Length: 131
Image 1: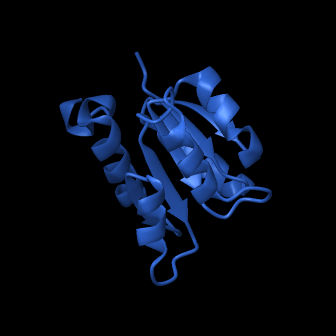
Image 2 (image 1 turned 30 degrees about the vertical axis):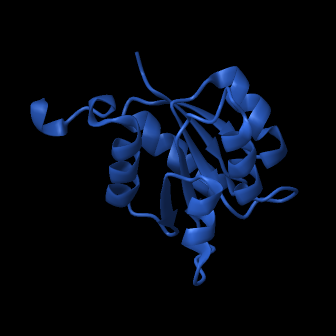
């Protein structure tokens, strides 16, 4: 059974990139463009991982991470923050909110998938050398 990833990203190009990349590695994805829908979608989709943009309109990714981690049903889902907002101290604030991983944009395929592998386990991503 494919691992499921909820991708919360308001930028259409980044959303497509993350979903396409994850799907190419056999993940099932659900895109969320509006952060205000992220918590409800997480409850419905029951993801194994949440990829969270930090700079979202209406609600910040940091606020969403804090809400996820306070919710008993969702708190165990690992969150990977992906952001272009990379000022001094931001990674610490994002991790303090509860994110298990932090990647700054622009992302590289290798860094992105390595972080995903660490959070959901290597068995979730087929090893191309095994083919």
